[in-house]
Length: 285
Image 1 (cartoon, rainbow, N blue to C red):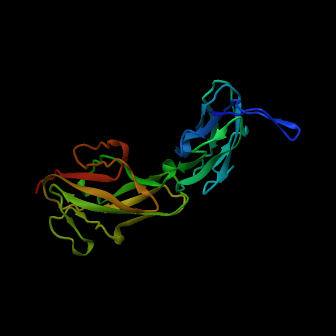
Image 2: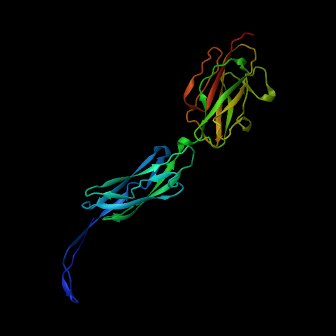
Image 3: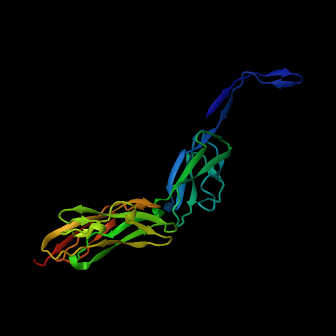
């Protein structure tokens, strides 16, 4: 940027004063590229871009550093040892790196600031401060049913469905594991097992809670299957996870089935939160 001043020369008290003379003041402006950054904890490194505009004919310097917020230096992040960024003549951008420190514990989003100060041969302009938000979705405790298809016989008695969790297992987690009737399989409650019922229902309430203690990564969801000794075509019902406390459900819903003809279990390509069961009774009356 350039400013022009004019003046004339005259004698004042034994000295001289200049009049009608032009003075040209040139300087550069330095700022951060962004006011807000969002970075995943697993990204490892955040590259911060600085911009310079205006007069580019000289070398400029600016100090840069961090200020703790909910994120703490040397615990959640570590700034580059170099605390000053240099712009050479003609240079309009420069970078400064911040290392993001990862851990195995899930944390809510945390923030800290990057601050510019003490420019040399330049002046600061907005934004000279940026907020960095560190997010941590990868470590969040995630609960899911890992298998998509089960094949069993109706006389199995009970089915223990594996419910697993990934991510941070340092805290307790609870999730409802309940059944949903589909197709022709009919559920009943434990106190009133009825004729022609195929399994004992798990209602969507606290009695169907599956609880993970600290450091536990797998728990069973128990389904009682009723053998009614009657010939029936293939039947199915769903087993669903819902209302997690202390974590979240798997991203991809899936289904699994039971069949006496095919004892093959097909696995999901992604974690499942819903499973469907198909059962077939091959015996005749």
